[in-house]
Image (cartoon, rainbow, N blue to C red; front, side, top):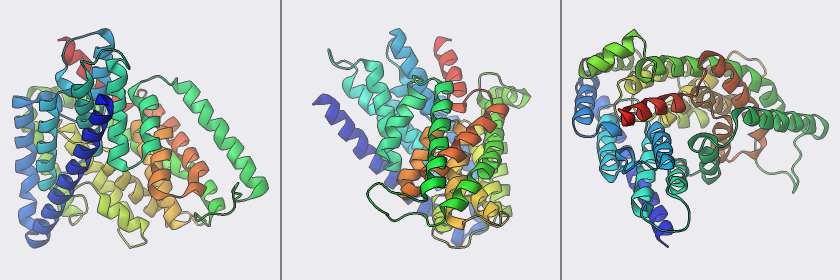
Length: 411
């Protein structure tokens, strides 16, 4: 009963956090529409303030939150003591500062923070239980519940726990499984067409074009996503480059530069780079014209600026928006591409390129779009993106950043 109560509490808090983020984003959109030039000042002020506030009062709340959960699960496995990375104080601080950053127009997502918040809730409720699942299992389950609650994708939550949080699924096996499934699915489609076991259901009407487009989107999105992860890891990863070392020495000054960069991108894109990117991605999926290439470039740059600052905030939603922009742009170039399908493939491919979790990426998009016919092309695009990204960024970004949090705990 305690575990169920913890899960319910985590789900309720995830919904309230989502509503807070929605209100913050809508408020900023109203401000930006009324005072477009004045809104450009907000990231320059809000981002360094958030970085200072986080470093001063709750440093474990910085960044996405998923690397902290991975690092905390390893600490729990070793039998370490109480972990501030998944404490209620850290969760509360994460919620407040993420809402503040969205109010200032920063390009962050709430999904990674939701993983950390729900994991903290579940861990706080269950850490002292005797018998039943061990604390590490419950911590991982809490993180998975965060993914499920954030996206309303329960299957993706389970897969994310296995593929990312628990590190219990060998990555070579991961690649082989998806490759075999995709090959069998492609063969079945070639022989039987859009065959459904219990009859035709609503879904994509242009699956041939989706199968043909998926490899192209995988390569393009893998390059873009791998480049993003490599750049981010060089700044806040365990093996920092010159920029990362300068940031570590002067975090607030670096955040000012990131805020200025965010404002410059927002000015150049006429505000398209603000916020999570949910509205822009939804607009593209619904067939409304949005500048795809501008959206992709501006979200890539603005999300990198926010994430590299180390401020609380995730990369999931902005990644989906970036992928949607790439898909919309590529749909105009590829002669046989279907617009909506290419956008969905771009979202899955770019997300997989960034986080290198192809199963999670494909299933999230399948559950979000409710289009079972695209499962095979989604897996193909995600797998190719992961393989291409792996050539640029050898270790998945969340695991690379988790090393930073584990080193920080040991020191």
